[in-house]
Amino acid sequence: MTRVCHITTVHGPFDDRIFFKQCRSLAAAGFDTHLVAPVEQETGEDGVRIHPVAVPSSRLLRPVVGAWRAFRTARRLKAALYQVHDPELLWVALLLKKRGNRVVYDMHESMRGHILTKTWLGP
Image 1 (spheres, rainbow, N blue to C red):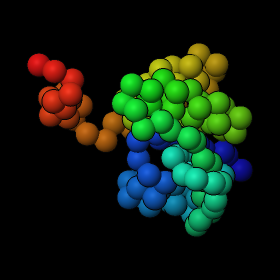
Image 2 (spheres, rainbow, N blue to C red):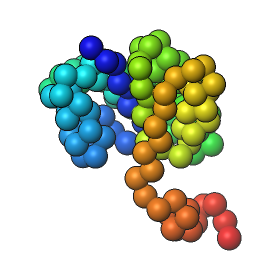
Image 3 (cartoon, helix red, strand yellow):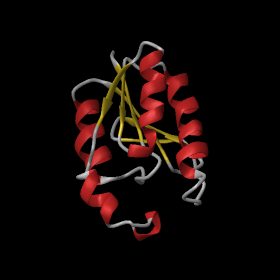
């Protein structure tokens, strides 16, 4: 059975797009489906194994510390395909790719427009 691993540090484990539309569909199609996400403890639902990653609440630490923790968890799963869902995980995607893994980046929003709404980033 082909193993697929979705990774997020921003979205919750039961995100509509990630869990309900993508992960459950993959599991129903017979894939060994895993999700690395901010959740308290390892769990499983609808054929999807959900692996916890502790993500700092700090905007400065999350892209580094949270992403590094997600990378370590995901890499241990030895998936045939990794799908990352957050811009802050792009460097994780590159690390996985450099190690010979297949990686998909799923951009949920128009990032240019999204970034322009972030007042904390400055002008």
